[in-house]
Image (spheres, rainbow, N blue to C red):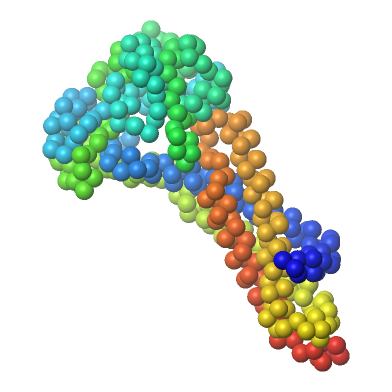
Length: 387
């Protein structure tokens, strides 16, 4: 730390050049924070301890093809299955088409299979008693300023009611929350009673979108999956049973390989950043050859000169990177507040900062390596004579 003033002075020897370079670093890490937030939102779906023993049974043909509810008892009877529930996709929007919702019609025991969703017992009982009752996540309720007792009209985009109306009005009877900050994105959903949905929609008739089941022993998951799929083999509703993680991954992959896209963009950004900052450091050291020679003359060792140049490079990346991550955190918070919890972005948290700091240090060392080596190998007589 005693040489910090020396490193700082060297870094800002050419203020304009340094400031423009820092702006480039800020832009790179701002983009890193935003893209990392989107990637984490997709990859974290279903990745939790409770989900390790949960599995999803859906139509083998497609996610949008429904399954008969008569499968419930048959799945429950499969050895190794400890609990089963089912749900159907509803979708729809609130007030305006841009306010699309993750809305599902669920069986009465649906919340029993998701213990990570904390819902007061009295509110769960109210949900069971109220035909038009609805339960929403805390993030969703806060976004739309909903409170218990509110009437929530949803505009259906797929399922009209039997009277031809596309407006479904629900009574808000419960608000659940998630304690794990990594799973806060799960607070953006809305759930209502499957029985009400099945009876009121034009497309009812005892059909469920998918089944959620819990296995008693996770090690038996493969055997249980094969046994469940055998139940409907060679029928008109063949099924595909998989882990919740695999289901979430396959659902996201219908749109795109988010990890590959984000990784490719960030790779290109940081490759360009290495070239830019590397050129800045090389030019900075080249201009200070006589000064480095003087440092060696007054007693600085080769290793000390090497450390000073590397520290300068890392400081350059750290300044821009920290500012970029701070801005990305504010931008992500603003986007989530504006667009709601349905938009796939997670807050820029500790994991993103840890990864970002590691990148700052690594890139700083990489771009500073060659200039630092040049400074270390510098011969005093050659430098002072201008050779």
